[in-house]
Length: 117
Image (tube, rainbow, N blue to C red; front, side, top):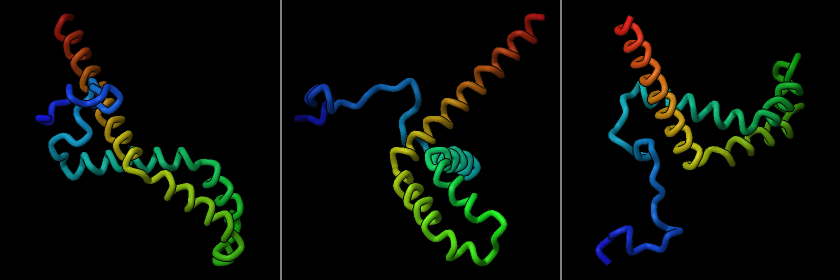
C-alpha cells in the first residue's frame, strides 16, 4: 500500500477531469471573488423558488416583513444553507475554470482568424 491509486477499488479511484484539479494553485483575490460569484449564483439558482416565495411575501412591506414573512424567510434560509456545500463550491470553481478556458479559446480563435486575414 504505497498510496498508489491503482491499489484502490475502481469506484474509489479519483476521476480524471479535463479541468485543473479542484484546488489548483491559489487564485488571486479577484479570481476568488469571481468563483464566489459563480457559487452564489449557483446556490440562488437552486433556491430560486424559495427566494421567489419570500420576495412575493416581502413585496410592499418594510419592517413588517420581519414577522409577516418569517416562515418564508426560514424556508429560503434553510434551502440556502442546505445548498451551501463544499460540493457546490467545487462545482462553481470548475464552472469558473470552464468559463475561463472557453474565453481563452475564443480569444485565441479570434486572434488566429485576425492574423490570417
